[in-house]
Amino acid sequence: MPSATLACQFCGQLNKVDLSRHADRPKCAECTKPFLVDRPVKVTEENFDVTVLKSEVPVLVDFYADWCGPCRVMAPVLDEIAEANAGKLLVAKVDTEASPAVSQRYGIRSIPFFGRFENGQMVRTAVGAVGRDGLAELAG
Ligand SMILES: [Zn+2]
Image (cartoon, rainbow, N blue to C red; front, side):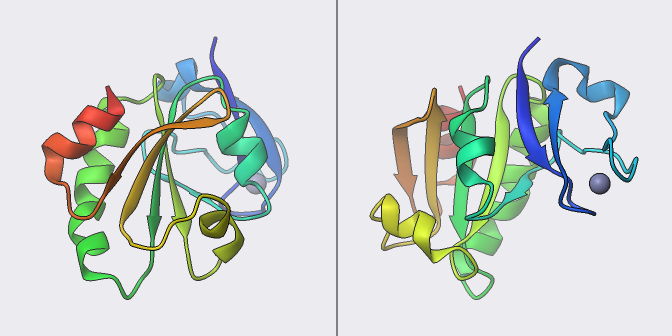
C-alpha cells in the first residue's frame, strides 16, 4: 500500500495518506477535509522533503510561478496526468516565488521545470512547455 505524507490543503496538518485508496477520498485526521490525491498537491519549502523525498511512489514535481505563461499552459495537462496516474504517481506543484530555496537546491533557473523524483532523487527532468507527450514521458 504505497503512501505519502501530505500536508492538508485546509489546515496544514501532515497526514500519511494511503495512495492506493485514493478513490475512497482519504480524510485529514485533524479537520476531516478530504485529500484530493488525483489532483496536483501543493508543496512548500516546509514540507517538500517529507512529501516529495519520502514518498513511496514516484513524484512528478512542477516548479512554476503565477506570472509564468507557459506554466499556465501546462497546468491542465498536469491535472490530467495526476488523474490518470492516481495511486501510482503523485503530482506536486512548487510555487517557486513562495518557496525559492527548493528551486535553488536543484539549480532551477527556468520554469516551468518538471522533475521526476524516485526514492528521494531527481531522476529525470524536462523544461518548458513540453506538452502532453513530454509530461507523459516523465510520468511513466
Ligand atoms: Zn486538515
